Structures are given as structure tokens and as C-alpha cells.
Image (tube, rainbow over the protein chains, first blue to last red):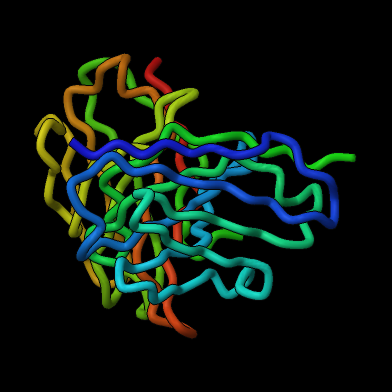
Length: 118
Length: 111
């Protein structure tokens, strides 16, 4: 059974960097795409990006200039950094495992709400 | 504005069959698998249908998916009260460097 758990600050000030970590309880990182998805309260889902176990990444073009996803296999974690945040970045942030890179998100974390406010 | 288009709402009575549509383009649905997610209130989304029409282990056979050209549909038969949720379609989009795109979501109400 694969379990994912997001952690990080629930409140970030405008213009600062949002940082979240996803801890994975799984036998292996290999051959999967470890992804971040967000959802503004009451709204739909938005894909942020993924990191492959090899370290290669792919980001949503609309967020690409502000996003970094990294992987720490020694800690069974991967992380999200989103810079220069505004109120529009207020959302539930989910980490998830993508089996094929094509949107097959078969395991999700419970999600964490990050509010951008001064 | 979502890349994939879904109706914002749908409804049905217990026992009925309900379908939810998802419309895209040649760069996403037209050339890649479609996925469906169910999001119960206050919870994370759950993979409901994968690879157009496959049900992951544990998903009841009341749920089925189909795809034709640049459109896809999710059908729920024998509607139950616990099916009341938001449903999202998703697909890989080949434009630019590629990305996962979602529909805007359909809120299903069981009357």
C-alpha cells in the first residue's frame, strides 16, 4: 500500500516562497512520476508538475517560471517550491503518484491548505 | 477556463443512470488516455476510471468510461446517494512540453 503525506506551512506571505514536502510510504520511487496538483477552495483541479524518479521534471507552462520540484530518495520525500506567491496561489495542495506520466494519478495525499495572506 | 470541458452540474435519482461528458481536442483526448476522478466532499480525488475505460481495483462496475474522438463520457448506473460528489476528467496534453489537463469538474447531486 502506498501512502503520501503533505507537510509544510499553512500560511505564506505574498511575494514569498511556498514550500511543501510530500513523504512517501512505499517500497520504491522507481518508474513513477511524483506529482503536485492544487485546488483553490471551491474550484477545480490544476496540475502543477511532476518529477520522475531519475530527477527529470515537467511543469505546467503557466507556473513554470515559479515552480521547482525536487526529490530526496534518501528521505523518501519530494518537494514543491512556488516562488513569488499571491492570493491566487491560495489552494489545497495535493501530492500524488502518476503511474504513466499521462495523468494516471493512482495514489494521493490527503492535501494541505496553503493560504497566501499578510 | 479549463482545457477540458465538462458540464458544471448533473443530477439523478437513486437507481437512475447518469452520464457526464468531457470534451477536449486532438492534442489531449484525441491522442491520449482519459482518466476520471471522483472527489467526495472534503477529501482528496480518487482515481475512478483509467485508460479510457478501465476500473482500478475496488471501483464498482456501476462506473464505466468511454471515449470517442475528442470526447469522453463517464456513466454511473444504479445511482446511489454515496455517488454524490464532484467528478473530474483528465488527460495528457501534447502541446508545448506536455502537461496533465483537467476538466472543470461536474458536481453530481443525487436527488
